[in-house]
Image (tube, rainbow, N blue to C red; front, side):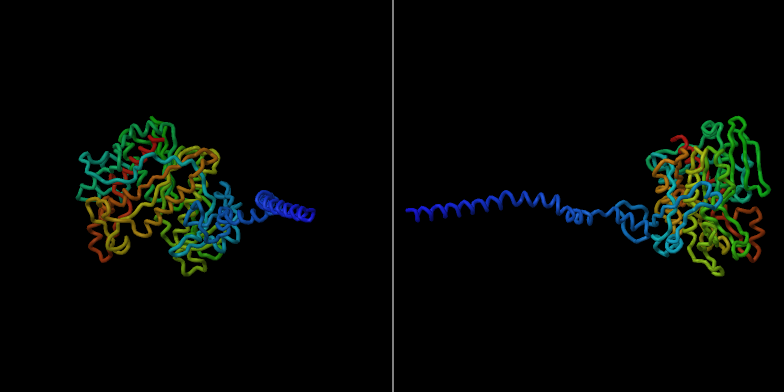
Length: 480
């Protein structure tokens, strides 16, 4: 019995031990595993999680110039590179922190792929674009005709005075722009002058900027003739004053917006255009604190040959086979000039006004260029989808739109605001609005020579389609 009893007790003991082991496996081991994972094995968890945090690696790759996608697109045409550029450096060319990485890989333009182009500091202005889209639409007939003629406006430049120069057709004067989904009201000069009472406005840029300013001047002069208060020797920088409205209107010649010179520079001979892409043109930037609004219009001059300079060093050029410099192309220079202008506007103390940045304006040369017999003889607008931007026009337009978009994501420190004026599409549809051969009243006698008569298919007749640009401008002012 004792022996049997002992066996029974032992078997019960084994049974109890088995149950105890099962209990340990079922209850205690998972609990211990959890403790281990959150204590001694925490490095394993950290390693796993660390491999799935992409933002840091993407950000680093962008800064390092690597070709890596970003979870939030920064801009497909750029390598993001933080560079501290002050207003003083933009004006005087000092203090720009351009690293060796930028010189080696950032400052270049890859044909067909601009993903390696250096991006300077993104200017941050308050972006206050119009709520409705004024820039897409169509041209419709308007029997009322223009608000002025060459007989009622004394400010039309000779080359744009198509009526006086003998243009026989008048149909190009009887169209108005109809934006999609809304009506663009006819220009009201009295309303405009009331809105800008006591202000100082400036058109800054090339001859197209002057063309638009003269259009505005013609329309405003139907209400009041301004006094000329300043003009330089070349008559390219002029100020007018509307006494009754205490309003000053200026035009400032600055075809590149940045400093340009033809003087000899480090062995590059005199006569070659040299652009300091990190130095703003003092012709306009020194006057900026006194302005309430500035309209920037540039583009066509960048297609010219030129040498590009940054931080007082030659970084490249365009169409310069005789100069030892990297062929970067004019897209590179245009992008940097737009960036520099936006930077200067946001950083300049004292400027709290509005900066209107206009997009690239197109020409309508057919059968050649201005110096090879190109003409623009059409007499009616294009219809929708009848014409498209060519490759150069499309990229120049895109550069302005992109730089404005990514340069106005945050408010500017000086409180200024920026507006994009996209006149490219409405202008594209108006091949009939240029002077053509009627840029000169003596075109008939000149046509008898062996040399082709240069046509002007870039600037606009006054009056003409460019008057619409100022109607759009007025609408945008009303929306502020």
